[in-house]
Length: 148
Image 1 (tube, one colour):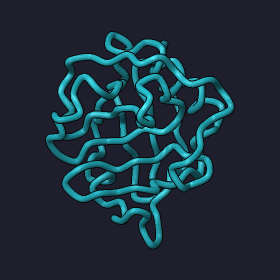
Image 2 (cartoon, rainbow, N blue to C red):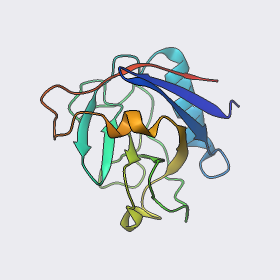
Image 3 (cartoon, helix red, strand yellow):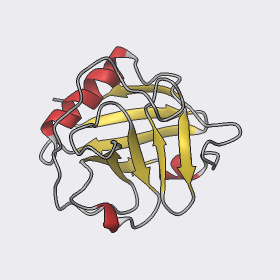
């Protein structure tokens, strides 16, 4: 299992340290999707200042996922703080698929309710620079995402 992902945004590279110790199945899914090219060109469709940037929807609307089955939750006590990468889901705890979010700031009210799978090690300034909005008028996109 690789230990990092490189997510290239239009403004530069973001290096994410994977946390299979917290969420082995979610990390495996993210790596599989990234290495298959699934995330290439995907938009950040929901970017809320002071909260988080969400992407991973192939429709660019927050209403879609991959063709793979949804994942069973792997919640942990890992705090949702700046740079933490976690899975988006519906009201069903076991509905995470391909969408994820990266926290801009402390969001500990999400702890033990969303699956943390990684943390930004380098390039958080590129996440900070994503166009804001729900959806942004001109959304930022993932140019490429691969394991490393």
